[in-house]
Length: 109
Length: 232
Image (tube, each protein chain N blue to C red):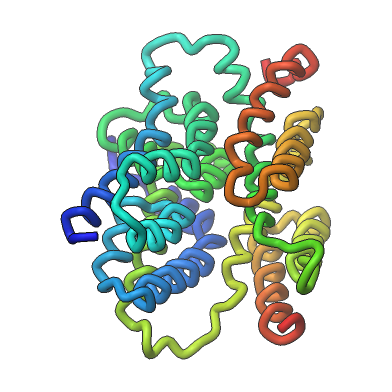
């Protein structure tokens, strides 16, 4: 690619990302009533989206090869148990991340 | 819009902290990655600033090395970013009182992480919600660009092994998913999200599971609408 083609490619990516970020707000502007089904989606979607994001984070795990995703699942389980117990976001994320870094750097090498 | 109180700034900063290390390290990894592919430091820094979407930026590295084809870039990046449409729908209500440049920035720079934090944060009465959301978004943006800049400029002299630090993102989403779970009486929506996405991942594979998963979630939320009375 030439520099110009690279610029066009990057601009295209920016447009695609911005389109997805803006489309809901363009379709349903603040000053107009939002259709009932969209209002319902606005409230019902987040729980499902957080589920989708969790799965998204685990998408690179290979269950059948390598370490079978053990570091990801062990650290994830620790995060959940710790958070259900103490409800402290920094503690859960901090301990989980340090444990995962230890596991992939020293244990499941 | 008057200036934010120091309590608002502090609260936003504290809420952004779980992402600080993750974005710095992931940003560094991205900067290093781009440099090792032969790009100048300007590429990762400018893309971090103007795209501000980690998954898209990593993919752009290989896109820029492939044949020039803007239409396929539009489709590919649009598909990866489509989950942003769900964030938009979920934030319609929370952004409705924000106007002008602030609104433009909140929408233009919304990521998985800023959506998760801004949607789920429980704020005290003295905290300005609009400023809180703006500052969280801005802090995350700064972390990401700074990480990319450090990684791409200091590629050869970074002394430490940041392998595994990206797990902070997974941990954040696990925590937020759990918080949402504990808060809600009905777990149908959460279970639909987990189940449909996992099933879609198994069937379609990691590169193309997002769109079918989103379609499945929409269909099931429609089907279960009358059962999900709590959301009406």
